[in-house]
Length: 392
Ligand SMILES: Cc1ncc(COP(=O)(O)O)c(C=O)c1O
Image (cartoon, rainbow, N blue to C red; front, side, top):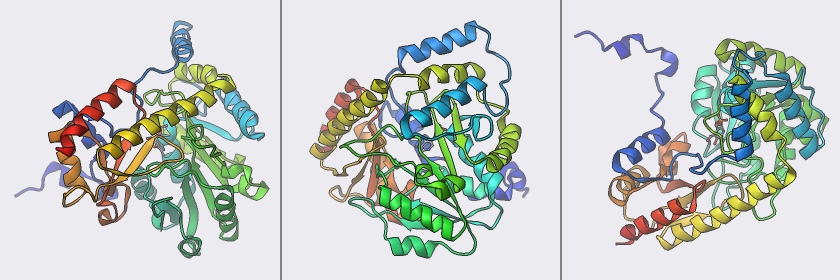
């Protein structure tokens, strides 16, 4: 019997790829009319000024291919943002590549800077794209556990993950899914290890402005000149401005590395949407109060969601940043996280992400689920009512 077309023509590179569990949960949420607390996007509007800037850019005919590494006004605005928040001087001509979201930024950076067989240190649980990204670039992941309740790591375990083949570390802070905000000491220790092993420090800082309880986000690139030389910062408009569908992100890296990343980026996507790059200039130019209010409003949402989840019987690990809550489900009598999430979406009417999707070994996440709290009050209230059914 002939092999199916998929098996005959699928490349070996993606042989082990699974359907994204998060997107699968969103599909099931739609099918069952469930409240979607699975996928990480806001269900409330983006700021009016930013939307107006996008509309104006189209009206003004910013409609053709941009300069491949990003429109000059946006690169200037990105550079100005790092000066404003971190006192850093980033050269918009030689150190910034604008991409289609952090998603493209990460894969473009890995394809440009990693050779097949190189090792990449990844903290676990991890944002689900890092594993496929490493597969596409041929990297081998070395995992370092973040352990509840505070999702800290063992420094000895981190050191043991480094070796002669280590090419890079991928650090996501503030962290999805745990909500961990890495401390200055941790970031410094990591930067020192990267220097000792001559590795790159690739950081995903997409939740940089969403931090709570007086925590402060520490971009590793600010730690000192050695870290500056080996930092590759991936970021985007998606979370800070509630525009996950705009697909505008960027990578900051020293000039030589940027030259390599730009080559890959050019052939992958040419460029991010031109009018939305223009709108990005307006977004990054928002006053300081916008960024402070963003964090404050998400802190209120976090507390609201914590209250709902705890009342429903979940054991919550309180996040210090980003917009997710990881919960233990031991109190519920289910064989694992996937069975629990299926029950939740099909019978209770709430979609969540099974914890196993954030681990290399699914068994490590079998008692965890993740909820997204980038939601409006009506959604919280609906979820609260639905969870009453869970208590029975
Ligand atoms: C840690 C992390 N990085 C990257 C992304 C995707 O970012 P973008 O929309 O800029 O591609 C997400 C989205 O959920 C995320 O949580």
